[in-house]
Structure formats: C-alpha cells, structure tokens
Length: 259
Image: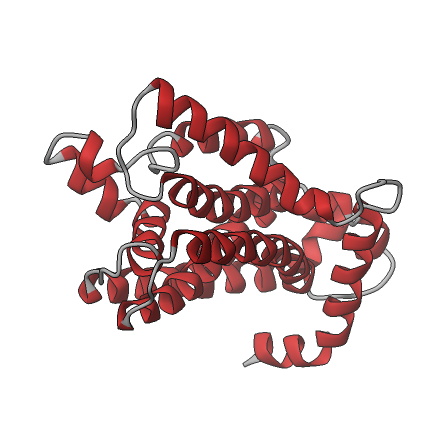
C-alpha cells in the first residue's frame, strides 16, 4: 500500500522528470526525437540484411519480426543497464531531499517505455504495409506488455539495491545482457533454429524470449500463446516486483550513507 501511495503522491514529479530527461537527451540534436525511431530502425535494417539475406532467415514479415524483438529488448536492456547506477547518478537528489527510490526507477521506465511506444508505431506502419489483418489473438499483446513492464521493474529493483554496494555490478550486468541477447531470439526464431528440447526450453523459460515470441505471434501471425505460461510469468514477475520493492524500502535510508 505504501508503494501505491508513493506513486500517487509523486506521479506528477515522475511525468515531469521523464519529460525533462527526454528533452535533455535530444536538446543538442538536429534530428530531435527522430533519433529514438532512427536508431532501432537502422538496427533493424542491419539485422535484416545480415540474418535475412546473409543467413537466409525464412520468418514471414522478417523486418517487422526483427523490429518487435529489438524494440522490446531495448526497453528491457536499457532499463536494467541504467538501474545499476540509478542511485549514484541521482546523487544530487537522493542526498538532499527524500524521494522514494522506486519513483526514480519508474521515471526511468517511463522514459524507455515512451521510446518503445515510438518503435511500435513503426511496427504498426509495417503491418499496414504488409496488409496484416488483426485477429482476436491481438489481445495477447496486452498481457505480454504488462508482464514485460513488471519483470523489468522487478529485476531493476534488485539492481538498484545491489548497484549501490557493488561497484563492478554494471560490468557484470552488461556482459550478462550481451549473452542473454543471443539466447532471446531477437534476430531469429528460437523454435525454428534451435533443436528441441533446447528450443522449447529457451522459448518458454526465458521470460523475455517468451514475451517477444508472444508479441510476434499476436501481431504478425494471428496466433495465440499458452495462457498457462502467461499466468506463470505474470505471477513470477509480480513476486519479483513485490520482493524488490520491499528490499528497497527496507534499505533506502542506507543508500544516502553509501553514496
């Protein structure tokens, strides 16, 4: 209940701070906010050429297939990488006024969520260009996004906490994310490229791979997904989020002393 009260109390601050960060990122750029679309779009073109033509990938609507993976992975990896140093990068705020540390994390998530939203506008344009018809399976995209937010927030809570005490954690997280990226199927279909049972295990028990797979099926291929595993990952992400939130509340007074 304390978490929801804090979110309500600091909601306007979160929105204002997120807008300020977004403006500051492009304040000296000629292309302004276009960079938030141009970067994943250029990555999509590169990976489409490498995996679509050089490695002869056969997935239908391959550019959109790649773009969905890049958009969701970028949201997840950017948030985790930034959360490790979140307290220290906001030292001026943390050491002068009290603000729940989860509010700083939620602000970061809002910034990256906005960038992901812009990327998905490109996905919608691709779907229109490919004349992809939506079906009722489109609704599976909603729980996929909700679970992505929850599990990103939950894992980031732990990184916020331990990032205060472990100086090398940022390097460890960067290496682990690089390894995980190739096990998530951003550039290829795990179920088609990795032989069973390893393909099934990676596609089901890697949460980000499962969510990307669900999003692709619901938007591009008019396919549903396992409701059981959706519920499984929803419960797991909620559990991680609750434990991570309690961890920060329990230790947030010590953060000021350390930084």
